[in-house]
Image (cartoon, rainbow, N blue to C red; front, side, top):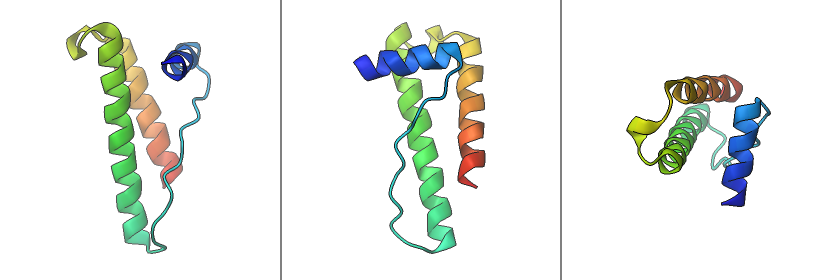
Length: 81
């Protein structure tokens, strides 16, 4: 729980949040891209669920936080390319 609050503070203050990297299972490009996509989807779902828990439900999440999450996810996807 402490890590969640620390990452939330970093998000609100615009700091970089370090995400654990998923180890690669193969060297094939197609498999790597699929793994990256799956990792990104799981990460987005996990963050959204934590935000929902923090605000009580998904509908209570402020729109600006959802926009910030979307920007973070786009940045992560760019980094994985």
